[in-house]
Amino acid sequence: MANTTNVTVILDDEKLEFVMDSDKTILDGALENGIDAPHSCQGGICTTCICKVVSGKAEMEDVYALSDEEQNEGFVLACISKPLGDKITVNFDDV
Image (tube, rainbow, N blue to C red):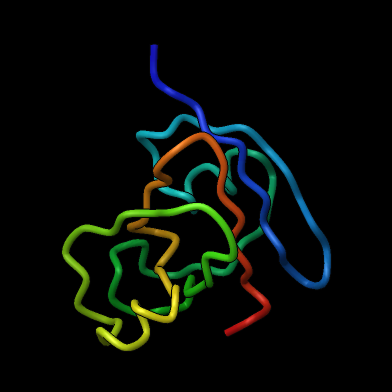
């Protein structure tokens, strides 16, 4: 059985919470839980799904669209980011 992560998404000034499999992307988890998170390409290119990790950690693979500075400030692309650990909060409004 896959590990799960408790996710809090801040979107349009609302806090939305759900539990997702840790092996899925944050965007997939949000969409599967009925959250209309911003997205387009779903491949880490367009940056429509950019969000900021407020607490917890996420890992991204093959990051081409974010600068090192943006990544160091906590920004991730939800479509290619998987949560690390049992809890994460991401903010789509603070971008």
